[in-house]
Image (cartoon, rainbow, N blue to C red; front, top):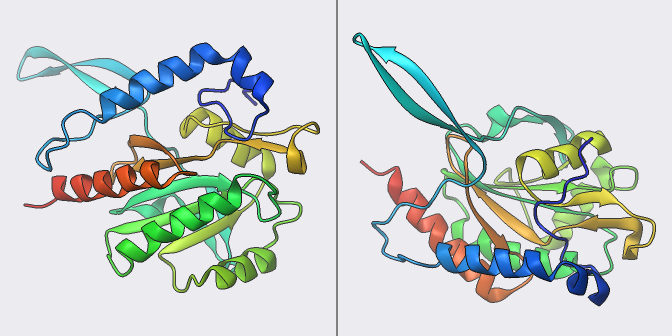
Length: 232
């Protein structure tokens, strides 16, 4: 499994931030670019890797960009049923990584994601997908109780568990966030506090600080912009 950290964890000690100050500058610069052009008519960028693919159309060569997308996956929700990428078909969704016993940033993240849930509750084009990174503890029953305690009902916000390595790999290689075990970290796990906005084609359209009100305000604004892209 790849250990490459594309987005630094937000619950790291100060020594981490000193060591990775270059990352912080780069991410801050990228965030400032995302903040440009707030008009509801502007399209959000597509993030991640892209590949140039050449094909012949009507006897002429044309080159298109194929963008990184979220691959298929198979996890189990708080209701005990199977959740795959197809569950999110024709939806925009927000993904995050957490664990129910997290002593640091997860409580802040869930307070903020609950705001997103309340704002878009009942919208058939929107879902939320929270992946536990401590599946040994976060069973289906634990996730169900956790969701109930948050006041989450229905299937618009799913909490999923599954094979730990597959969850970690999906977070790092596809969603571009850190998710891995670390015995030195609070709770024994390192993870990003990011919320990832994914469009109906499974492309990443934004990454936001899920621990702050400002970050989540930007996320909700961009969700509205993204929904507008699909209107006739």
